[in-house]
Length: 238
Image 1 (spheres, rainbow, N blue to C red):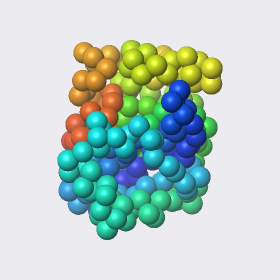
Image 2: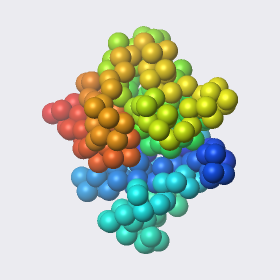
Image 3: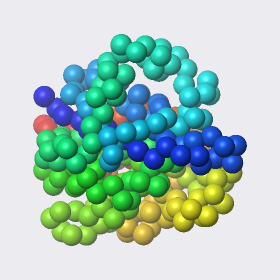
Image 4: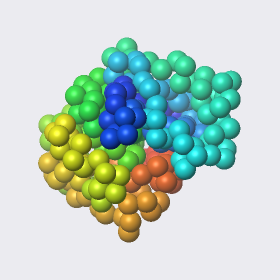
């Protein structure tokens, strides 16, 4: 059976100017989970500490509605049952997974670059020929993540996307990020030697596949990114 690890930020603190907390952006884990589960994949969740909290803004009607909201509110849904068993990344065997998917929320900017256990799982998944993927702010996982075979940045020379600088500006968080010395996804791409691919607009549904590397730009892209991950895995397997 195909094994998938969905990585989750463990950072859950006040971030926004309205006093709301950041954390896991719910649909960026929930919608990919549903896509992978529908394919019959075995999906697990892990964060660096084994704990998490939701981004307050992600729970509003703008983002959480329809089927996703039904699944979220059903305590017995496979998604909630899987999330109840969230693991500490260091307790997992990093060689176990065929797909690594980094979910997001601004919290990832704080902990993913230092999340050595999650990064090890991503690196091992890549080394065995698996798919490594990230959505929105999830590509923060690539900051300091090296290819085990070459020692070079895993995304060096590759094309990636992720949440746009324009989007950060519209949300009014660029100054907050600068104060906390947080890099934007575009800055992380440049730092690690990747080509950052810009979508038509910050809220467009948009994903980029570069071989076994799949990235998406925002919550609106969660489903298409997960489907591209499935396609990339199937092309590797065949």
